[in-house]
Image (cartoon, rainbow, N blue to C red; front, side, top):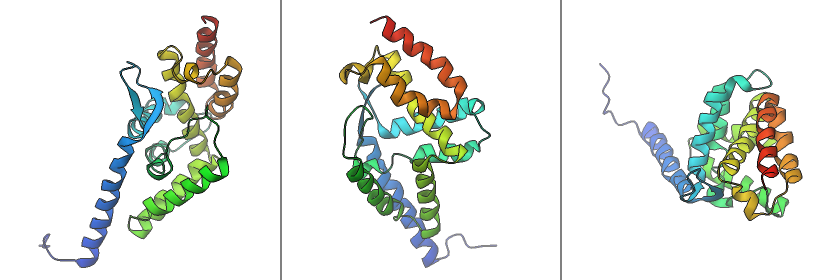
Length: 202
């Protein structure tokens, strides 16, 4: 019968690395996004956003334009914003120096995923890079949901960040449309009418 309390130094070190990572990503709860909660009581944080996107993938998986592995999509969405612990959140309606932001996020990915045991850390880092590249079917669908969720929140909160950023109907279509439609024509067909209704009411 195995001794579950046997001292295995290598295994204990791996567990401590995993716990270090899990303690570190608690900071994502303190990264405040521009998007409000639907009840408008406060802004959502990036950890809440990641959880909500994972649920979007679980519920809307059959809406993908191409066959996907939903488990991989969910993993991507759970980790995609972890780099914001170091690099911060940068909404699409704000102008930023893209090269500096990309460098900050790359450095963050190296540091944070590097806290894990090597094989596990490299696996998650590769998934993060795949999401950022948005070339695989899994990543394209994940990216589309990342644009869909804040769009839904903005409509539900009478404009949300669109009002704050003085964003036009055309800008919403440009900034959200191509990304959402690449992952799901059905989802974009549905929400573009909601967007039109919102702007027609203004």
